[in-house]
Length: 502
Image (cartoon, rainbow, N blue to C red; front, side):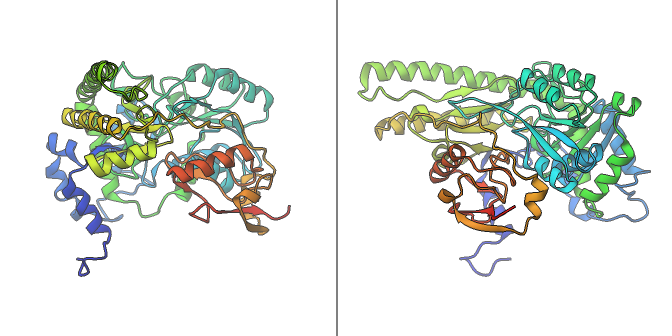
């Protein structure tokens, strides 16, 4: 397709990556389609492009399913043990926005975890809803988001008796869980509807070695990114409503469906719907067995790394002058499928570590932060993937020794600071009194746009909030080290939009 060898287009770039056979420790969960080949779903996928269609006789309608789509959704509903399931073709984003606007009316309060995805803030903008933020816990060494404390959730609910609902992220992007069942019970006792962003937990029901699912913990509405941790195509997600929420009429399905029609395309992709059906089929038929294989591969990888670490440390102590460096630390807690590797010990920021893995070892991670890189593993990963990662870690460490790198101290993530809200997100978004100022001059001013390190897509400063010096200094420093910041008009992060006057 490309006549100019100096210019790459989408097909050129994707085919190049395909030819490189990059090892995938990132989403989507099918891992470059390997799981489809392994389980012999290729006969369906070979003709997939021919089934790109629209609503005609025989194809049903996603927004009013009565035939083949209804049957497919009912199967997913049974497999995931929900009272009502919806296929989402605009990703979890449309599900989160629809859920928020379905349970809240304009001017209502929504209690919201501060580590919520930016789509939750966007839902507040669309629905004219006021977010009440709960502080999220952050590991100061790794910068890993650890979710919410029970006492913080209880305090937010007690202080906002007029709130309509609460939205929490479970598990966190890094696979950390918390006392969700107790939080849900307390929220229900106080009359709140509970929405859970379970984007990174669609796989949790595949093993008792993994945390309980949000539905098992009693959540009312659960949104899952099926494409992230299960083998569906990118942008394919699901929303599950609990049976109790339906029976008690705590959740109005009619409002949910009306909001989904507003946030989701009227011409949904049949290819994406097929991928959801395939993912459900794989989940039911092979999921538990494949998850046991995955957990076994992860545990063996961790044991080998532990032994390598001990051996190299002994060698360094006896022979090498550079004893400052340590081997990589592996963090693998509640959700065993999430593997975070700290790189500060080997003298590399996470951004540098990610770049070296890709450029020198053909391994792509899900994300990096200042302290390390996150590997998202799924039932699509194989033993060889972990062996290649292990080999890469050893080579990177030895090279760091030769280059005489020094261990890096962590940067302080100012998680305890929740910026003061001067305007609601909607008021700030629609304000016409915005101007661009240099970021060093923006301290104390009202932010006019969302400042979102990506991934994971969490607002550090939301539109309408007063810009704190500590957070801005952190963002400036990490941007210099390689952090990607989205949501801002100036991609170089030299200027920021602020509200000129209220």
